[in-house]
Length: 280
Image (tube, rainbow, N blue to C red; front, side):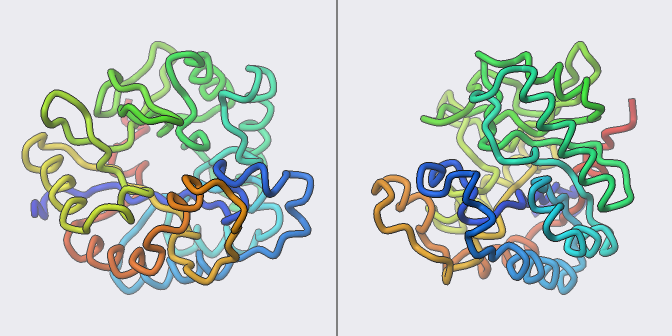
């Protein structure tokens, strides 16, 4: 492992019932009546990060910040970056430019009001900026964000721009896009940035991929996970489609031990600092 490179650890702060795969089972209008588990899960993550003396970026829903302002302040007081995941976890591809701009501007305002700090980073729910809605980058810049981490340069059934740059690039509007990490092997990009693949594949695969980004590419990696992925006791939606159940519930008991190994094997920091987003 290359200890000289600090990688970016990111957490998409949403609850189990807010994920896109289960959207049909938990309409947004019913969210306030669903028992939340995000608070306890984020507190657990904060404990683990403190033990390992690691910093991270928390891409947080405005909806969560409104209901758990003390949790947002806890994250900020621990030295982590507060960034935006939008307000209500609605995919960019499902919104008009006007609605998308309103959602991300509201999220930024809510998070800044709660945290008392500038919010400069944004990540689209489900990495939902693709070739058909690149206009979203202009909305992100217009809303006042400095950087985005909304593009995944892979081929996937729900997201991805396979031919996008693999490493941070600046758009004409000045916005810095920080794609989630991939490894290039056998002529294509492979997911290396966490999420469901971190639970699906053996830990050694993730370790090899991040080490390859550090050593072969000489670049910092950016990795993500969700608080609900550390929560094997979360309620199960038994009538969800088999594919959705497989992706959401697979290996939940293994996430925390793997996360601990990841924190031991590599150096981690906040995305805004790792990529020096305000440098230019």
